[in-house]
Length: 202
Image (cartoon, rainbow, N blue to C red; front, side, top):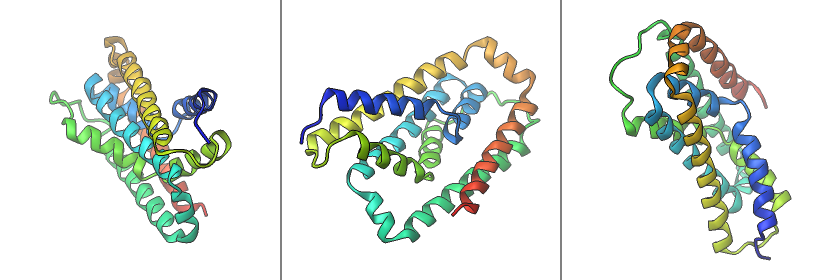
């Protein structure tokens, strides 16, 4: 069967709700943007969006079935992602009282950190798989799959770029600097809790 415009719109509505929902990706993106500036935020969003779109591609290609047949792969990805979240949480807590450096975050590091954060969350793929089963017909052509994945990637980039522009204003940055220790420790606590939850839940 072929992809329809109605299918794509339904997918985009659910996807936008998922992107905007509070979670590790959005929390890390907000912290990075306010602390390191607009460019770092946009590049982090590029990494997050690229990884998320690749999870959608994996779901469309049937990776969920691989997780079912070989659950240790899912477990390894989940634990790896959880440990990365906990590492970010520890670093954020340790440096909560540090002044912000003048040097911007390296471009490659911003992109990689975003990708690692979402690659380490196989639940993104499982969510994508659940949505795909409900929204899209079976037997999609390769061109339809390409359209869905590119659409996902572009939507993520638009969301994070717009949010980076909003968060990098002088007023927001000044407010962050005024309460940096508090904000960073709240972020560290939430990121660490998400990491521990991934490890402990079955």
